[in-house]
Amino acid sequence: MKILEKIKNKSAIVGIVGMGYVGLPLGLAFAAKKINVIGFDLDEKKITLLSKGKGYLKHISDSKIKKAVDSGYLKATSDFSRLPEVDAILICVPTPLTEHREPDMSFVENTSKTIAKYLRKGQLVVLESTTYPGTTEELLLPLFENAGGKRKLRVGKDFYLAFSPEREDPNNPDFTTAEIPKVIGGVTPQCLKVAKALYDLVIIKTVPVSSPGAAEATKLLENIFRSINIALVNELKMVFDKMNIDIWEVIAAASTKPFGFKPFYPGPGLGGHCIPIDPFYLTWKAREFEINTKFIELAGEINTFQPYYVVERSVEALNKFKKSLNGSKVLILGAAYKKDIDDMIEGDDKYWKSKGKKNPMRIKEE
Ligand SMILES: NC(=O)c1ccc[n+]([C@@H]2O[C@H](COP(=O)([O-])OP(=O)(O)OC[C@H]3O[C@@H](n4cnc5c(N)ncnc54)[C@H](O)[C@@H]3O)[C@@H](O)[C@H]2O)c1
Image (tube, rainbow, N blue to C red):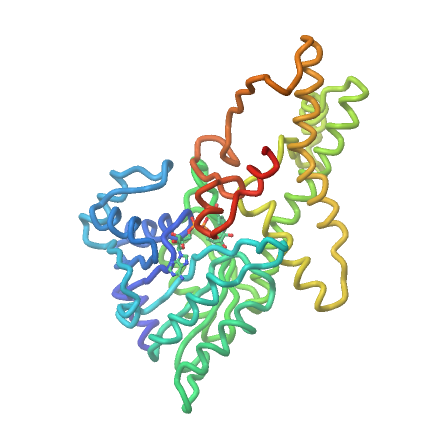
């Protein structure tokens, strides 16, 4: 296989579609290993900045980007007709929820249609966006197979297709993109072989699984596990508070148990993508099989109640000083979903505006 040879001698060119929180560090990881990368994005601003060697995410320094661009290994374009130039296409576009809290697959679907338009023989396509089990084989595969017109392209022979979930944790100093093991599921054994060979060039450890569905489900399990455990401590926080017991003290004490306990911490509400959004991709898909994912729904309910709980507690605190919430100036620190990053997704006005909608958090404030 030509592509395997190219990967082996590091002459394969990697195309990344969607140069955001996931795509940009992934591109930098390949470029750092002297593998040519072309970043594709619809957002002209990002392309212009990248082409000048400048960044747009707070936690990724300009110098890191400049180094990759100056080395010649990282290029960026919004011209998708250049897709045939690359040997591997890694899809890192958003997978949000619609206003009815159902999967919004429009980004993945539009990207896949564009790829299908330009797909050439011998290319590898990997979906990295978090999604419901079945996406790769039910949505992407038919589009790519039919890309050949009457003479259908054969997966595993004419092109290769896999799913490999992104586990990016922006600004985590302990784990960079290259240091986080990567799960991969190929549509055929050949697809897995090619995708694994590519990621083995940059990622510390690859973890092959039997199918794209298993890889898609793995990512959801990881996020649902966190959502449910966070909901549990959020609930305990409210109970213990009434009992005058400090939840933080309790978690610290429980954490001294050397087995069978993993600490999770309460918070004022959820932001980001992984916990408030991704679990509902499974809820939606499970309905097709007539299964209600009660655990996931309950965790979502408890977690989305937390901002209201904070408001209630703020009212109580103000009352102690004979003040009402109405008319008080309240300083809110930390609008991003975790410390030291600028990602305000799920709470960000710009994000909702780009979707032609009003930020639902702001509507609640009003
Ligand atoms: N941010 C994280 O920490 C994180 C972690 C793990 C997984 N993920 C998953 O990775 C995926 C991407 O998330 P992200 O945070 O990088 O999103 P993001 O919004 O930061 O970046 C996505 C990029 O895709 C571009 N884009 C949208 N449609 C496009 C199209 N049709 N063609 C080309 N580019 C297009 C956007 O302009 C944007 O630059 C999501 O599925 C998310 O769930 C994110």
